[in-house]
Image (cartoon, rainbow, N blue to C red; front, top):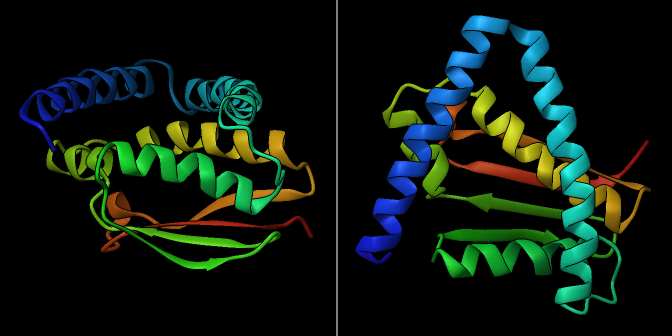
Length: 153
């Protein structure tokens, strides 16, 4: 990762992490839940925009993979696709620049919970019959983060 990008991520992580930590301390879990709802709604908008921008025809787990892969590749993030089909996607992220930086700053895991609502919204926008969940999380002690997209129910 270039020095400029790394510096920008360091600064972003510091500011975003401090913001979420302060909001949680001052306003409690209700504020965190409100932010999650806002990020989810924005994620739905982002999903629609990215589907158009990337000309995604597969409005399913494969389409979500196209969006995520564009982000992972742009930051040269080490990852592994464990499973990929129209209805199921399992992705392991080993060197998430956010998670590692947040962990080094002892930031509460809610910072990622809020950010990942964007992903939940993107998946919902692509296909409301699918759901997004995080099954492993660097900030909660796992060695990697794991995204799972699968059918609801």
